[in-house]
Length: 310
Image (tube, rainbow, N blue to C red):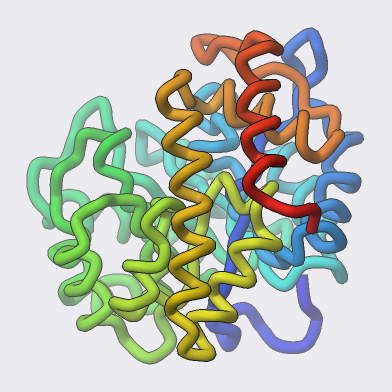
């Protein structure tokens, strides 16, 4: 985390890695690996922002106490090395979300993100905005991001409807992590976006389309091990070299299509990260199942056949 300017004055752009949660072989949180993980991202992948305790990090499989310990360790180890650490604090209930939001403010997080609750689902934008507002009150000075991922939550409320007027309800509102495939909804979010907001796209295999619509950056799991290549995609796009940007995007799609045909979930993705990075991240936590080594190995070999070393 940078000491140069308050987070509220630093617009979040570029790549943000949605981190995996390191566990021991017994399934307990493994704080010792977080420092190595951060060094790997900055030195090997050129990724200087992280989104912790999200979907990739299996946050809903951890207790509030565990999530606090993890968030604090990520923030502490990232200090002076990372630009921004965004802590996801969304839970199935308001009180736990508020508790995690207040804690994130205490430990020096650069921002918080909140997913829609998905057991009792808000059916329209209004109750969802009320929920987000109440969480934001627990950390009113922290930049606040709405985490939109309808395929996981089953909350099929347009993100653009959530954003409409939200700056009046949540003065600290700073943007949206848009992990959906509705590009018209994404475009409307970009169109409505205020100057200091960040619209961050979360479907890695469609990033180039999001950049063309004006997304300011991206949050994704594959940037843990493909960050160096995706930085090249963004650089090519910024220079107007659409052919090169498209070439890299197609390579990403080739890998992810190959992986999806072989079953690509959080457990497989985590094992792939272990294979490619050498980090000791351990297994996922139930109900996510660990990935058979042979299944992951063939995806790792496909990766090496497509991408050069960073």
